[in-house]
Image 1 (cartoon, rainbow, N blue to C red):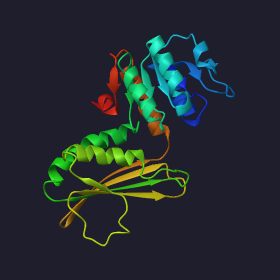
Image 2 (cartoon, rainbow, N blue to C red):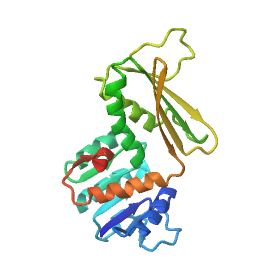
Image 3 (cartoon, helix red, strand yellow):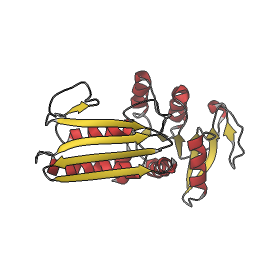
Image 4 (cartoon, rainbow, N blue to C red):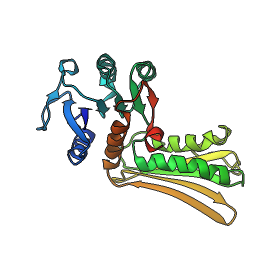
Length: 251
């Protein structure tokens, strides 16, 4: 049994993961962190992280960047592995994450979905075949109308996984409306759509002469990110200090 502390336990993702773990025979949430204790959970919730004295094997964090520094300090002090899912970290915080990884195992990934991370692995193989053959590469991402950033971090991560196979020689093109030129060959186009309640759709297009290959991922709920985080926790528990990501989880 892997004992988990859930940071941000009373948020949407925290409650999502609470439900996933409740149905998982290999894991158990033994404590939670949150700034408010307004939801009844089957585990103790600490509004002050420093008062938590519950033993655990790993921490999953889906909270706010405001609490990341204190969480890193806590995990280092307790020698607890950390699955860090909180986004929007500052450069100083990212540097602190790297320093923490020298003392504890830290897993951080742009997207926690097992599907997206498997697609990244597949894209590397596809790129080796299609890019040398002259296929154009485009990425289209779609999200709900409340998402403020564009393109999505996942779209950029997909582009980066492709570009890594191309010696990072390709440029990213986010907007073609101001250009009246033909499409360059060494370019990855990235387009963003915002509307409705779309959780997250990502489409990678390899377009050649008389042939188009599309690799798609559709997230129908945020549960896919919670499931990935739980799998990451299972993987990370007992690991040596270092930086890990979801590519390590899927192998």
